[in-house]
Length: 386
Image 1 (cartoon, rainbow, N blue to C red):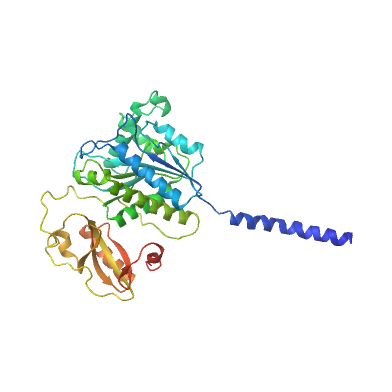
Image 2 (image 1 turned 90 degrees about the vertical axis):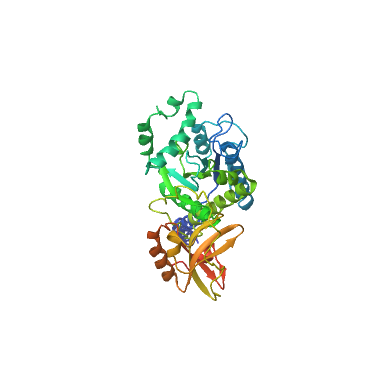
């Protein structure tokens, strides 16, 4: 009897490691805490917009609160923390400190862009890293200049001087330890901006003090140019802010699914961020002079198209690069015109055509999927994009 008990005990001991390994496998990575940072605030207005009385601090707060509400509604188990929920000034180092003290899994900082060229437009998402262009450096210098409003900022930021160009270069060499995850999130966010019909300026790197000391994946989103009259009006509108927050949320959801092992979706990250047009046309051409139909032919089964451009404005398709695109047509999404070519019978055919028109200047072109004439998105579309 005693021997049988001993044998049974030994067997239990042998299986204990397997039991704990099984338990550990079930404990998958989970995103539990997200910190949302509304840029600027209080006596720091951020950039001022072309629309009268528009301030960056108000737009960022509105988008941040809407984004947090979407995360809380859809994922009640995720703790959402805001660096600010009202119009108050928070020092940059404290924003990172809030995320670090709460062991956040993600840090999302929301901003609006500005440019002396009031025709500049589009959205871009940054992560901590090397300045690839002077334009990236200019954006980080503008955002980092906020520290001059703080007391004792040179000690708080290791002697950083926002007025000395070389210090921005040194700062950018501090590569984010979570650069792969940050890039993944940034790519998903930009993908959603494109789906919305916004002009995507791409995923970029620069040295931002607000990202400098974060100990988790972190991105800084420039939602658009407040200094552009038309884009500024969109940014300050409730509709625009709701659509922007929804796009960021969808990007976050895609990132969450991948990180938690529920999806293998890949966000396409451009090697070089696309260069936007220098300015929007001052005189709008006659609306779409070339006959464009909503659906060139009835599509049955799985078909593919290449989306090359989206806008709320007008496009002259008889001149320039548009005139060189075959099977060009448009689809309406609300008041947004989406310009596409196709359809194609296989993904390979569509992707080859996408590659063919990139030299024409359509660097943002991408393949979309239709089933019986209905456009697919998300995991449904990804199943055919290979």
